[in-house]
Length: 113
Image (tube, rainbow, N blue to C red; front, top):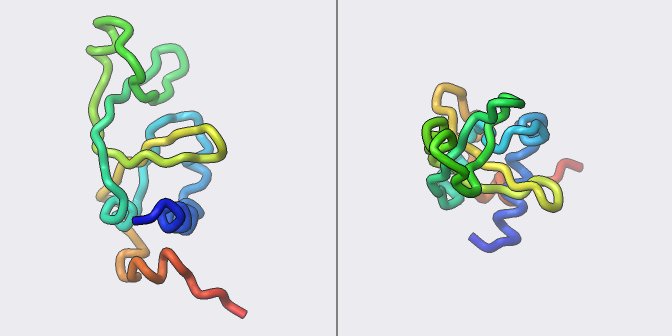
């Protein structure tokens, strides 16, 4: 998938859960299996911050405490805004209302006149 196509695809899908992307957690639950079928996944480690209670990505190991609290998730990384990276994880129990649409119709939706 070309970078420009990926950006169009992300934009088309992000409208559904934009409020979740705007929260302060690094890990965002995503109901769209379509994204996970179209964008390569990776495994990243996360931890719950003791002070704020937020889920943050492990950028470096700071000690045994972080290792004990961290957990791994299969994610896709996305850029939100200019410099903010979020990680989407698929939540299987939520319906994917776009599952019956083709990738082409999601990437290039028809404009209504």
